[in-house]
Amino acid sequence: MTNVSSSSIVNLAKRVAAALPVVVAALVWTAGGLAAAETVPATAGSGSALFAEHCSSCHGAAGEGFRSLYPPLARSRILADEPEVLPCIIRYGLRGEIVVDGRVFNQVMPGNSLLSAGEIARIISHMQALWGDENRAIEVETWLEDCK
Amino acid sequence: MSRPILNNLRYKTMLKLSHLSPCRGVCLPLALLFSLVLFGCDNRGVDDFPVLGEVTRDFSFVNQDNEVVTPVVFQDKVYVTDFFFTTCPSICPIMTRQMTRVYEAVKDEPGVLLLSHTIDPEHDTVEVLKNYADGLGIETAKWHMVTGPQDEIFAMAKHYMLAAMKYEEAPGGYLHSGSFVLVDRERQIRGYYDGTDSEAVDRLIEDLALFREP
Image (cartoon, rainbow over the protein chains, first blue to last red):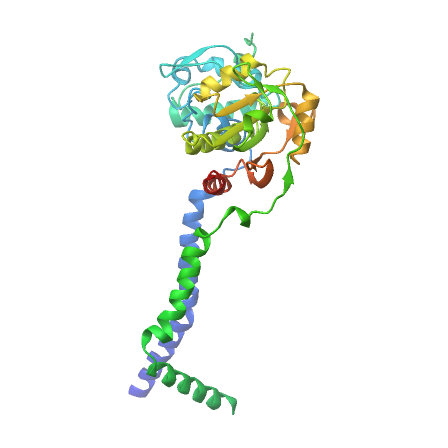
């Protein structure tokens, strides 16, 4: 019995030892997966991906803006007070003096004429979730009708 | 058969090493290696940078303060130059951010200047460039943003071996290089750096420290 039992223990130990690399690999894979989840690029076409592609090079990845050249989006009152003007700004651009977060900006923002209404909606939704009110209704197609 | 011999050799080698003082056997090679790593880079001089081209072409542009800018402005100066336009929706905002880092690094260095050319002079008039420079909060004497005839600007880009051209399908209507070019006091091109890559611009800032010394 003792012999059987010790051979079982040896076998078990061998199995554990054999399985160890797999377990370690699984842990590494899981940890890698968790780490990757934080850095994985946003799904193509998602609000965050569209923001990264069309907005962040000027306004910054965190919407922080840049000097008195590119206004911040993170503290823009437009998100809270008048999001209905955003689709026209995103599609057709903006020129002239504006005040954002108490500072004056006066540059030309180029329009993004190739963005669809759906894409604009996803960008606005992304910005609202980060810096505004994510429960706010977004009616891009209606708002686009009022562009001047 | 070979394994015992090898093991024997290793053993003998270990024995021999053990007779040496640690600094002769281990520390000395390590110290040499560390010296190479630590001081090899610091010993870099401007002679280690090959001459990649010479700026022989004359130019006359106008900067954001409506001043004429010619090669005379850069006489006995090291300068960094690039090509951009103010309404560029793609790489220019990133280039501008990076060039602003260079500006901050050299703004108190009288021997270094920056020169940015607009490739869209039709839109980027002196007033527009002035407004753009004001938005950045930069000093004209340090960072010249120039405009002029578009064919002259394109020719100058080509002279620096950079691409700049109209291209309807590109965002903003132009295709252009995002490189920053380092030009020394003798008007020789000594480096190209990706102006959209902060690590490349880190290197540019380090290299400028070498070139700015008389």
